[in-house]
Every structure is written in C-alpha cells, then in structure tokens.
Length: 420
Image (cartoon, rainbow, N blue to C red; front, top):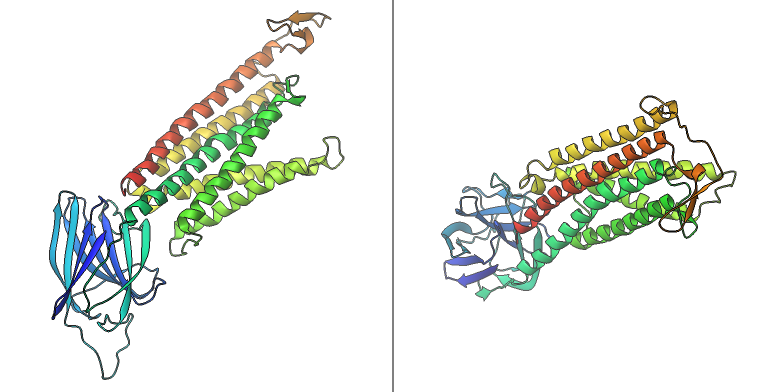
C-alpha cells in the first residue's frame, strides 16, 4: 500500500494505492504511536469489485471504528475525489479541506480534531471483508516511523506490508494445522492405544518395553512438543499481545488454549517423575494421569470448536463448525464402540461366547522369523474377533479424522489465500 500525500493551498490530498488483491486497505492518522484516537480512512474492494472509500474514527483505540457522518466535524472536510480498480491496482483518493481551529469555548469531543499544526504517525493496515462486505479484524498492521504534517507534501511507501501479511498468515495457518492434527488425530489415538490395546500385545516388547507403551509414549511426547511449537507460532503472530476481551470467542479460545498448553506440559512432567509400577501409591499417578489427559482432550475439543466459530473462518467456510461436530459425533460412536466391545467381551455375550477347543500343551510354534511362540500365548477365537473389531474401530477413527482434518485445513488455507 502506497499512500501519497499532495499539498494544496486549500485542501490536503491523499491517494491510497494498493497493489495487492486484499479487500481492505486502511490509512490511519494518529498523534501517538500506541493505537488510539485514530482518524481512519478505509479503502474497500467489495465482493462485486466496487471500490468504496469511507472515513471513520477510532476513539477507543481497539474498539470498533465509528463511521464519520456528513454532519460530523473531526478536522478537515472529507471528500472523495477518485476511486478506481485498474489492472488489479486499487486507487482511493480523497481530500481534507477547511481545517478550523477553535479559540472559543471547547466542546467535549470523543476524539481530537485533525490539525495542520501537528505531526502525525501513520498506521497502514490490510485485511479482508466478510461475505456481507463488513469490516472484520485485520491481519497486518504496520506503524511507520515516518511522520507527516497535514500542510506538507510527502510520499509514504509501506512496501513491507504485503510481505508481512504473508509471513503472519503462514504463522496463523501453521498454528491451526498443527493443533487440528495433534488434538483431533494424534492425542485421541494415543489415548485409545493406552486404554484398549494394552491387553492386545501383552508379550510384544520393544527394547524390553511393552509395544503399546512405546507407541503411547512416542505419540504423546510428539503431541506435547508440537503443541508447544504451535503455541509459540501464535505468540509470534500476536507479537506477544493478548486477545481483546471485546472479541468474546477469540478471548475464550485463548484462555482455554492456555489451559490446554498447561496440561500438555504437566502430563510429560508427571510421567517423568512417576513412581515404580509396584509402588503402593502408584494408583495416585494412574488416576491423575488419566484425569489430566482426558481433561486436556476435552478442553482441546471446546477450544477447536470456538476456533471454527471465528468470524474470519465462518465468512469463508460457513460449515466449519458443522464439519467439526460431525467429527465429534464419529468420536462418540468410536469410543462407545470400544466400551461396548469391552463389556461384551467380559460378559462373553454372543458372538463372543465361543468355546475354545484347543488344549494347553507344551509345544512351541515356529514362525517365519524363526521365533517360537508358545501355543498358550496364541489368542483364543473370541479374542481374535475382539481384536479385529478393535482394529476396525481404530482404522475408522484414523481415516475419518484424517479426512475431516484435511477438510478443515483447506478452510484455513482459504483464509490465508484470500488475503495474500
């Protein structure tokens, strides 16, 4: 975005030139570097490629901007002189004229008047509009070090804004993709392995450690590590600032996300200092580990759901929350299926009530890998049926979750591509 200012004895002319395909360019004039008491000039490219230029004020700094009406007097009469879209270049030109100074009794105002006697900082912002052409939260803000005075000519170029947007959106996209895959696919898979597949491979070991435990540990450590990486990415994206409470969904998402991050740190720490399996107080760790783990997953579900309700997500992918609810319904069916399978197996209900006619004998079976396995260790027919059902449910979870995650990732990509 290249704002160009031109001096005229009676009017101050400003032209905004935006070479990107974003829907929104903002040229904000403020007397202080921290955002607040801003005079905002918004150049919009609507859905039908109509160009619109309006003046706003932003007295609260972070509150929603207020449209300047024709009867308002905020310093300098605002008049649009040109709006155009040529070869992908958006042009918005306006003048500010008839600056006045009040020497009499001052009227209380929500924002200070623009004056030709003050040095102003410039904030350049780009973003997008929602499906109804309404302003939504912008994605990039650049506070320029150069100042201007409204009676002097100047050319101000903010050529780094587009690149800044690309970098920031990549951070936002990476955060969303990592969190989706980790908490929708990896974490529940790790929980399922530990809860339902522990008795499936009682004799199988890797480096003297049960295979189920190795899988569970690797998956969960990977999940915790990637969660911290995703958290770091969003911190960089937000530049260390907290979400405003006025954005209720985003604020709730940030609070719940922080709780998820905390549990992602607590879980491996607890596992590292746990007592020996034969210790008399081992049950305390077992219960705490389960409660914190399941609690973290439930919190992550609520956090992701809030993310699908963000206005910028909803404006481009209107069914994001419905897709997530479909995944949640599938998870409910899978978990109920596993629990029913355990109950049916314990009670030996049909078709699990199968008589095993094999007798225990002292004979070893030689496999292709030259390893002998006692016949007593071979699974019974009812266990074979149970294990097949478990593998089937796990496959349903992995495949369906992967497909739904990809669908949501496409939605995240649409958000980024719409503003680059």
